[in-house]
Length: 443
Image (cartoon, rainbow, N blue to C red; front, side, top):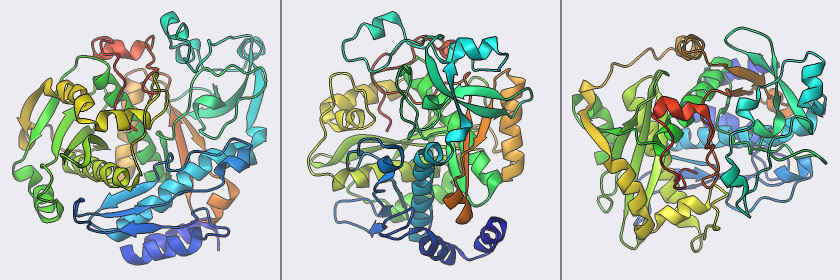
């Protein structure tokens, strides 16, 4: 059966059967892309959602990298529907796998050369604006992990296709793939994250999800590191269904979740942050979940379940991680702000807000995936932003019927290491200018 046949057959199944079908094809402790799935249900002091999680093993062996620290991959999903959490956990696991397997299986897709040589030979390459985003004062820090970009130093480049017209562009692989390993003589100029990547059995939905993540991070980083206010969303008739879900599934031992809409200067859709606060002695003081969608309540729901997963996954950990002085990972910052004293920084940032009832916010846009994806692509094009795409589907992911899509733009903000914000990125000007250097709280 071809990949198309597998994907189409899968999408016609009921939700529970879809989860079972994916598990049969992808989960195995011996040879599965997902080694196992664990689900926990309502705990006495937890949120009344199901949590499904897994711990991928051996990804580092594909690329000859050191093993990752246990629990650092954050692979899991939370929500009221266990079938949905299983599907999302499997898809996220395959997404992480693709980031390691693609550089292992497709070395022929990389060109190792200096940017100056590529320019001299007429190759279209990413401009230096996207590669030279750190200030001299950051490089002066003794533990700063990155090096200055050198146009004469060799780097691995990966070809990406423009979604807004124009020629293909070569982009440094280290900016795109988490599993890419820096080669000898190659400067380490930036780190990659998986955000901007999506895996789905439907290629259009994979592209849409990846685009929404790109918009989400730009909006989130633009909000945190500037003074632009958020909009606190008030419950009303527009959010009636979501309010009912919270009343049914939320533990009365926890304060109600709080939702903030983050504005974008020029990209469509709703990007929402959900603030979940813990009780004293029970869970982290505050965690944040993110959601982006063309429908407001869908974005709120995505943010809610992500924040819930952070609370639930946090209670699994033995002890609390201590951040390094520089906050150069995406775990220490979350642990730092889970402490009530440090959580005040997050509270203060989101206290700078206006308020609006949900019904007074802009109307929802189309829920058709194809139309929604076209709308996002058009927004990048119409605002003069470059938008690039790469298919990172590996042979084994292909056999399972999945599509792995990676999108990237040099003209928007990406998820930075908390202690290494891109101070020189020109995109901050669209948000009023960089003004907050505190480490961000997002995983």
